[in-house]
Image (cartoon, rainbow, N blue to C red; front, side, top):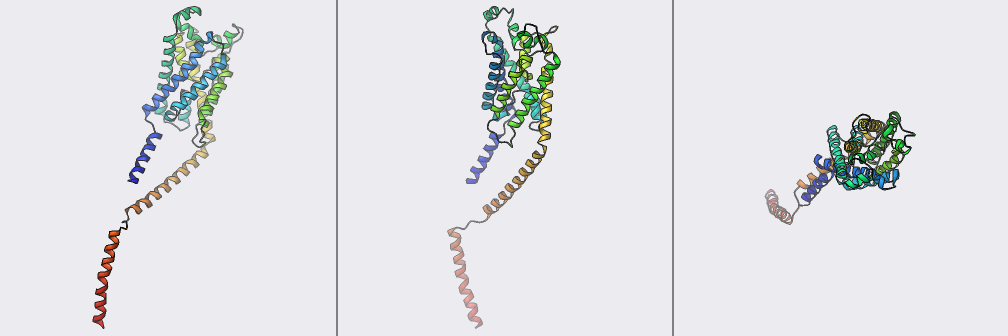
Length: 323
């Protein structure tokens, strides 16, 4: 019975540690939904508050920490296609899972933007002097040149062109993915991974908000651009390519550097795990042998005593005959 309980406990532990692909995709959808809802929501309603870049940074950080605490054990708390790419290049997920995560993240981000778009009061749109709800979403779109927040803050006096914007996005995305890979490294056994990544999101948002409205996340950038619906001429939608290219390039650089830097330790870790598996197998064999050996019971002892008693007279008779 104890063996059955142990076997059941082992199966339960395996089930808790490993989640199905569907469960992971739902977790990524939820986490990206929450992250996009907060970041885009703060930006859309920015004309009504004075939180500025600090509010956006703290909102994104808190949203990530909350999402990771809720579903991080299921999917790994990516909530960002760039992080998923880094996880794949780092050897932590398969390429099939990576593309599946991308789809789930886009769904979550678009759903969040759709909720904000559908619930924005029309009288508020008119009070803000906008012609449509899509115009309100312009403040949440990532952009450069005339769509850079610096251009709007300085009323056209200064702006970030595409090359500085590209470099900034590559750098901040590389830092974010590097922090994620280090914070969620299984060898480190850190309990504050979500806090580390959330802190990185806050810090990187503060320094990049004036440049591009703090991209780092292609799913969030796509959702905001989709509902801003500014795809003509020099519209912000035409600049979306940079907010896919730069984060993915940054993620690739961070993952390749991290994997190269930690490659020796990874090999040692695999060897250690193989040795532990061999020891576990040896212990299992010893345990199986001991379980298969016949147990000593009172009935067996009585039978052995009777057999000994029966053999003693026969031995004595043979001795007398010889004498």
